Image (cartoon, rainbow, N blue to C red; front, top):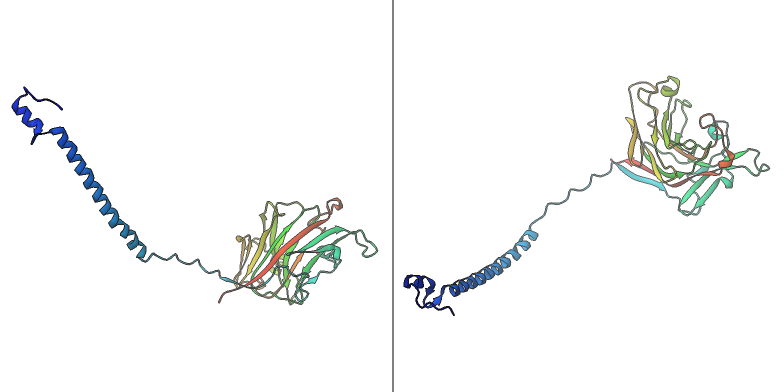
Length: 305
């Protein structure tokens, strides 16, 4: 207790209030203020808690739906059946063009895996069964299944070798004027150890009249790892051809008002094969065989109406 004896009466009046030391008064006032603040906080929190409910009850703006794809899947083959569908596919037989020189129906050129089909290029070790040095396998839908205008996609991967030429391509389901006037669509061709693939069109306008840059008819597009799965595709419509890889457009070929320039708006057969040798890909190195292309699935879409 502080003694104020002998203090100045005026000063003493300032230091005391109703007999209480001024310091005690200050402490009492602070305590009341803190209690008031605490009570006010409780009230505010109680009011604020209801605010969240009010906000939650308010209608939130809806996320706009993603745009619908212009393509509708109408057919697919995922090769999960024990055997290939013979009502759709046929094995490609030997022929005189470079791409057909070593085509074979021999079982050694085909392998059915759990959910894929494999086409192989091999050294022929049974000359009694077939006198050719090399054999390779492939399937096509010629005479069985036609694909009209729409989108074709093939998910595939391939190993590499000198002289290997795997391809995914289409020819007219019904011939009219003959090659190249009826057209050809090469969705994917790979050569040797290239880190790229080719996507190409053929027609009388391109190959006979030699119009190869107006518009551009082919493109070599980089694909660093062809031994990994990629989706190779093409869209065929009334006014243009659009090539794409993994959903990325690689080449657009427009229709022009020129006779014979655009024979592509028609029905096609689909061909998927391993090819060996020829004037374009070059010589075959037997030490690098076998080589293979594995196809996971094929899909065909039509434009939505």
